[in-house]
Length: 329
Image 1 (spheres, rainbow, N blue to C red):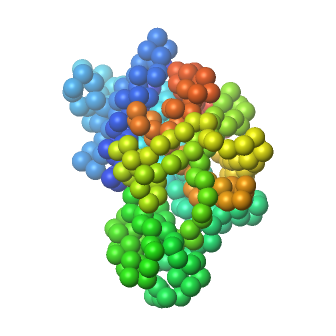
Image 2: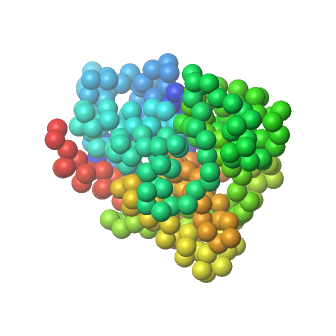
């Protein structure tokens, strides 16, 4: 039986969502195949949590000691949203200590977490996207010039953040300063993006049994100005699977979502956001560790597609174990 760490937490405000996701993932792993252990990666420390007891993780090899005996893991199921689990840091660490992990590798994790860089790469592959301006907090910028280039309304968002934390919709020049202050609390780098007036969809894509597969297309209808944290996690939105789009548009969304996934040489689970304008899907961002809480979109898509989460994570773990054979460790 494989010893599997279900790793959750993180150092950002997304850790709350991650801990919720952990429970659904933990329950989805077949207990007859895996010895499952919850592992927390938190600012206050790393530890395995078993029957209410905490056992410190040895960072030299990601092991822990229980009853005087060292315990090692055969594989990690990573469900950390945000840093350090979605931006490449933990992936690089696990690879260095030789432990297989689910999801994409450290480079893809870092690239997709950086919205500016991800868009720049996908643009080379013909993926449409909103017009955007990049701002670094340490360098001068002119709000008037930015507004003129992207137009109003527009979105101000942290370059590296998830769960829509720090995002604002800006309708006037007066709203820019507070929006930037909010975004800079999450990241010193910010993107200002033009407003796209269209249908928002979230597309689940995975490498399932070795094949790039669209799990589902979900239409997002937010009761707020946009699909913010409240809309995502506190019920202020409708999430309609499958999306109410025609067959031709569905095909375009699937083709672009697969092209984006394969262009980045992705593996594992992903969820990408698009705005469909005049039948053309425009890329917003890609999440390589989408939520698995009861309110999350990806589990809804898997259920609609008839993919059992137990089978999904069996596939993820097999991909992780097979990928380790390519490592030079």
